[in-house]
Structure formats: structure tokens, C-alpha cells
Length: 616
Image (cartoon, rainbow, N blue to C red; front, side, top):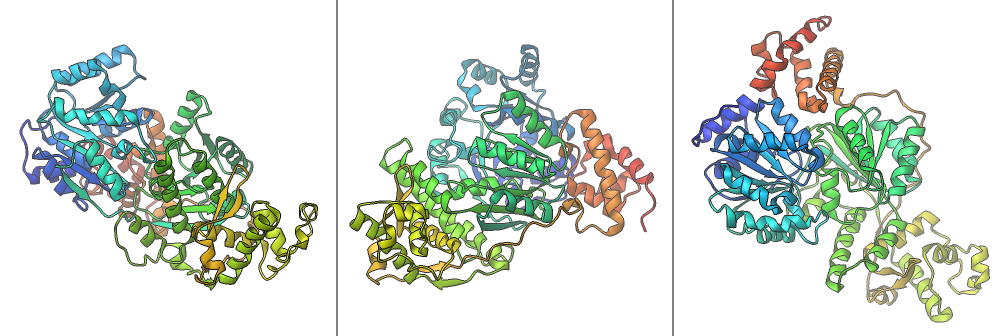
């Protein structure tokens, strides 16, 4: 791409946006960030996934003299990032360990000659002196540090090599730097600024709200079956991500979905590199696949049409949860963030914290993260409001989360809490015993199980005093008492113990309000006929046009060996299907159709449209 060697005015950035990327206007703070970096200023940008962070460094790199160097931790995705830019007519390349020497030499020569607009590097590569020497031989327009939260030492995606990026300013003091992330609390924000020496940079903090995502959290009740019901009833044929805590759970869940007619792939560190890479490539390049994965999967995934993100296990932190759910709906279309969690999740997470490496302050940090996640799960208020409040942002009730759409009931659970805490207390003081939630609940319900009779628990004065609640309701009480720190778990077996605050409840000095457990859900209906969520809200006459355009895109992407979204996003195809342009000029007005894509694909699209029956 031929670009001016000197800086352009702000209008130049807008022209670049329209000409290269095919968009009419900037969103939110994009232009402000772009103007600041283009003028040579440093920036720290906090902007939600799907908010257009990449444009904040791509456009300045195209405008400023030299090559923009992008630090990205995503070696496995660099090829796709470069392919997407190349399709736009941008001269992009990457250097990483997957390349042959001849390819590396070609990219290095292009960089030194100024024949690139953007060069992607992994942070590990900057620690090699030969990389520094290479950068010294070329002209650098800016440094972009993507996924900047990886520098936060106690964050959920910490990467040690990111700590060395503070040296960029020391070696290249005149080159502007822009660090970007989609998630950061005030503490993480401050840590990023400190570790990357960006305290004096201009900070841009956009709203973290993703209004197109519907947040829903349900109590676990055969979670794989609950997931299957969600996919069959709401997301048949859609692409999505299912997160599980363990590798074994990933494998079992993927097998379960495949057995029930859902095309699903596993992804975790226990798979060999070839299988992981192949599954990731299929997910990115094919429509309608479900990826079942540990949290090792997903950072930097640019697939715009992920219609749902489901969690079958409780995330360790709100930051991790937000980052993972943010991979849904990058195209702005309606998407679902669904989480199933239960008492066992709370017990397991507490055990992981107790057994974790690190000192007391580290474990307290992990506990604080978990407590915030539990508070989000158990809230009776708007989930989106609570989620944004965690990041220091205010929001009114959203009307698009489960607590807004179906407000939960609260009830005075003080007496129930006293009964449960009394049972734990009596087991400890009278029998010098500690048990998990199952035994405590059996005692409250008056169940004469072999274990209850073995230990003589049927002779306790609390035996059978909790018959007014069901087993699932008592589990909800335990879960919520754990969330409110009125109860704790300890040891390898997750035994229940009282906390310093338990006495306030037992002595009637504290009221306990609880969220009422919903009734057991109905059995899963038979599989519905698959549908495409992306075609929802299109005029009926435009739906077959849209599907034909998707078929053309899939064939083109397969021929070129790139993900389908590199050709065009669903949102662009939807607009084409609705407007049915008949000339290249008309097609050029569609959002997402820049000059390079219009020249490369324009006539093919018009031919595809011409081959269809006229719209009714």
C-alpha cells in the first residue's frame, strides 16, 4: 500500500478508514486515540472486545512514516491477523518461530526497506538481541502492545516476557507507544501503566459495556444437558465457545455434544500441538462449529460471529469472565454469555486457592477475585450493572440480562442459615467432626443414609429440622453463605467450617437475605431444526440471498486458505443482502467494503447477486 511519508491531518485518518477499511465514521474514542498517536503521543487504551482497538494503531501506522511494530502474544493467530490486513491491501508481515529461514529473511528485508506497513512480533522475540538490531536498521512508526493486561503479574493472563517491554522506550525513546487491552480493573490499569512506563501517557478508558451480549447465570443441574438445551433451543447451527475448568471435562463435553448431533471440537494443553492448531484453524475457518476448551483458548480470537460463550465451571475472576464472554458477538449482533455454576464449583475454587503457590497476600488476592465472581453470580440486581461496577463504571438496569428479564425473588434466609450453621457447629463441638455439604444437608433433611447412621448423626438435635427446604434449595443456601463469607470450606475434602462472621447470624445480630432457587427446569425437547442466528432480523426475502453470499464466502475462503471473516464479516453480507446493490459504486457504499476488497471481490458479489431470483 502506498501511503504518505508525512503525517496527515485528522481528515486523513477518516479518509484512511473509509478507503482501506470501508467504514464511514469512527466509533467512540477511536479518532481521539488515533489523532493522539499519529501526532507522536503515547497512549494506554482500555476498550472492550469488539470496540475497534486494532484501528487505534493500524491507522496511525499507515499514516506515520515507517513500520508499525505490533507486540502480540498470539503466535498461532499471527498468520490470520496478517491475512486479514493483506485482504485490505495493507502490507503486513510477522516474525515468529513457526517460519522457515527464507520466509523470515524475506520479511526482515521488507521491514528494513520500508516495504511493510505493520510487523507483528511475539514479546519473546524482543528479548533476542538480533531482533533489536533488526529494528534499529529500519524506521519504526510506532509500537503497539496488544493484550497489555498480560503484563499484570497477578492477572489472569500474565506473560513474564511482557515485563521486558518497558525497555522499548529506553531503546527507542522517540517512537510512540500504544498499549491496548479489553479488560482492566483500576488496580490492573495502574499496574499496566507502571510496568510499561506509561504513567505519563494519555489514558483512554472506554465503556466496557457490551449491550449486544445477554448475560445469564443458572444453577447447575446436569450442566451438560443444560448446555445441550441452550444450543438446541437458541443456538442451533451457531458458532460458539464452551469453557471448562479441566482437560478431562473438555474432552467429555466435546464427546457429549458430538454424540448429540452438535459439531464440537476440543482444545486444551493436553492435546498435541498439531491437533490444537488444526482444531483452532477449523473453528476460525468453518461456520457453525463449537469449540470446547480450557481458558488456554481464545485470547486474540477475531472471529466476529461467535454467537455464544458458555461456562460449565465457575471462572476464577470477574476479569477472566469478562474477557472470555467478550469473545461473543464481536460483530455487534445479539449473543449469549451463559454460565452454569453450583456448590461444587465454590468448594473446588476455595480448595485451589488454599493449595495455590504464593504467599498470604497472593491467596488473599485470589480470594477477593473469587468473592467478586460469587457476588456476580448471586446478585439479585442487574448483572451488567454489577459487572461494570467491578471495573469502576456505572450503569443503570440493562433490561438484557437474566435478572432484568426475569427478576429473582429474595427471601429472608436467616432461620435457614441459623439451622445450617448450627449443624456445622454441633458436628464440630459435640462430635469433633467436619463434613462436606452433602452430609450436613442429609442431617437437616432427616435422611437416614448409611453414613448418617454410621456416625450416629440421626441422634443430633438438628436432625430433620430442615425439611421445609428441598435438597437443591439447601445447596443454594450453602452456596450463598459461602459467597457471603458466612461459611467456609477447608481441607482436601471440602469440609464446611464456620467463619468469624457466622456468630453474628447464630446470635441473631445479622439478617441473611438469599436469592430464591428456581424450580427444576423441564426436560430437553427434541432437537429443533438448525437455524442461522446471523440471518435473524433480515427481511424474509433477503435470507436466501444472505445464505448464498455466505456460501460464496465459504468457498472463496477455502480456496484462499483464510478464515471466512477475512473475506467479509456477516454484518457486511447482511447489508449486501438487504440492499442488493447492482453496481460496484453501490456496493462500495456498504460498511466494511473498502477499496481493495471492492476491487478484488466486487464483481464476484455482483455476479452472485445476479444469479439469484429477483427479490420479492
